[in-house]
Length: 336
Image (tube, rainbow, N blue to C red; front, side, top):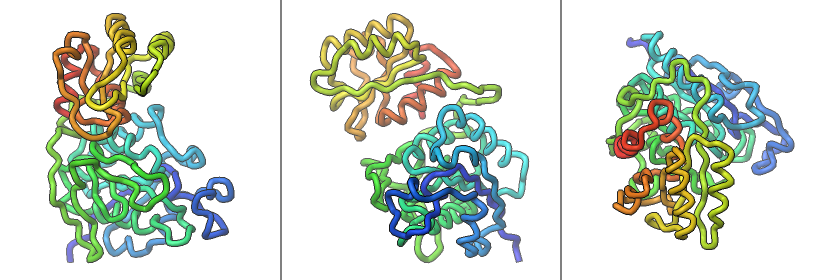
């Protein structure tokens, strides 16, 4: 009999790690409960042992109550994933537990920076692990199942919740508490971790990722700081000047529709570009591709393709760790 695949589960906190003494603490669990390590979460799903040889590690235990990772932790997490996958030939893949609020950003960062074709699968939950009808157990089991699946190799970093498998590049959280909180916008999710125990993919990941990016973070401890500004009717152009004075490495702008913004706001952004600050335009709609219009190019703006602002920020951060050249950065948005 063939040996079961080996999967490492890394814990980073979030709702999935919370326990309370009241199953109805579905929204106030952080006020009344506490967090447990990933080993305790695995004790709730002994069925995982039928799928893989599971090992676990609390990567971010000191931040469990905080519930999310950020730029200060992302490089170390990417390096840890790469190290585990490169040095252990028996390791089939990695599953990561995470808070749902910002898991899409961590996932996309890893999608761009982990240097292995083996699967890295993030999951989260919308209800604490002790909540009534929790999704924590099934989501974690699905993440382990996918991390162990040969058919997940080469697809980049994945996210699974509610049995749906998403590409880290496209997935967005679109509901605060509903179990079907995550979706990929117009493009569709990749496949299912289905009720019969099968991992089935129907769509491939076309944009380059993981081993096919130039974003090697060896020695990188601090990522360039990139801020997001939101365009709305009456937005004050002085907001741009105020943020520029704080010294960001780059700006991402969530524009109206296909790039709409007031003329004075656009002028303030053009000044920022002339001062050497890369400006990336995205659409606040969250869907559709922003076009590389001549007017944008003349002002030196970078167009963020179909990435939502929070995803465009991630790509600009890692891009700036390699180059500050506007044309090269624009090419990154065409490629990744």
